Length: 515
Image (cartoon, rainbow, N blue to C red; front, side):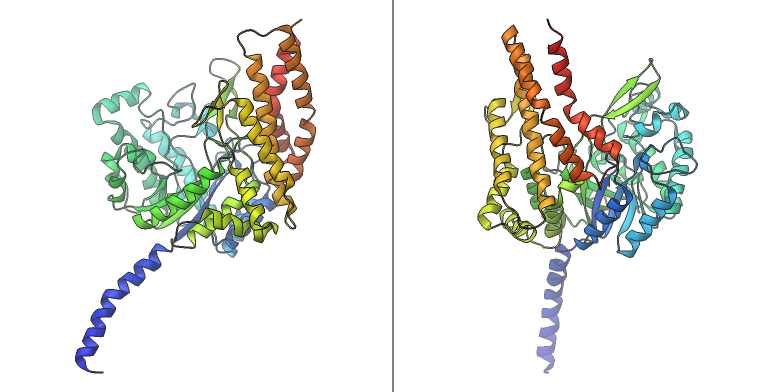
């Protein structure tokens, strides 16, 4: 080859190779993760292993486990709840995940969302507030260092992952107590926040691990972000809102820290009675490509079993009996469709084609025709609106009765479809639709009972309707147990069934007592 041609070819290669690498990089994340929330709906260990195995088949290489009180801390035994795994089970699970090439990162909340620790008076000195136990006080560095060194050391001993997730999100009580108010006046909220986060990160780094934390508060108060060790990883969680929702997003991008993105497949306003399928599909379609463009090195699908807000039951002014999760959602067993959509989105550089994906999924999983797949999608996406104080929260004016009609139509569509395979998996969609119809039927009755003038005839009519509704509960509860019996413990299944219908029984008892 002539020298001139060789030189020209070399120049061309130099200019084209970076483009090739950029394209490959855009199509791939180093960390392809899934977040599993075990704060409620703690999975049986065989189900947990099967779930991890299914994720590995979808190309997932990282599992972020929010153990909360299901983890058996050796030196802090008060923290574990009745569904806690044994240490042998945890070790066994992590070995199993390693055998299928999944790295298990433990998530240990260490600032907000620590009710399950602070509920015990052993840790009372760490509380930011003596009625709201959700947050530790960042003005108690010695006590925080002692507790979280113990917890992180335990997690580091059982988890081989190079990471420990320290939480750090939604610190709503930041600057609340008198000590913290004084510090905020002196140094500001950002310094108050990052001093505590730095203490936690330094513990993690001292254990030879890399600290990971949620990015929302860092976005809100970014001034002292530079205090954190360079090994720190931020997770930018975005469930369908503008990038600057929490603060100036560009400051996070320019911070020099490694960043992972996080969409969601279960999040607000999802609960027992509503799943915003279209919201989650749009989130997958839009945010994952945005993370590629921003150069994020990881992506992690979050899956919240609850919002993390709790209702407290006290037997005296300061003596806590129990904490109840305010929001429950349908178990993770009903979300295979979104897990598969996530896998599709992270394996391709192109944004997810929602209609095309659902058609392919329905054909592959259920043997449904293209026409039936579109019907399936229409049923899932139908009117995912909340009700607040008797009013439908929708973009157009809508009554509860109209919303109920749409839910009945969606349930009828799902009942009419005939999957030729994976019928039990398909049954989750039918059950979720039936639970929604049950709920909206109750909401129409409740609205009548809350009318300005409730006549004796109206009361009798409401009671009759409530009786008919309660007759549906055994079949719904039986279907729920049948669909999720291999996933959850019997007592958890019973609790979910009771909570789902509690308001129905309360309203009936109130109205029935009126003579």
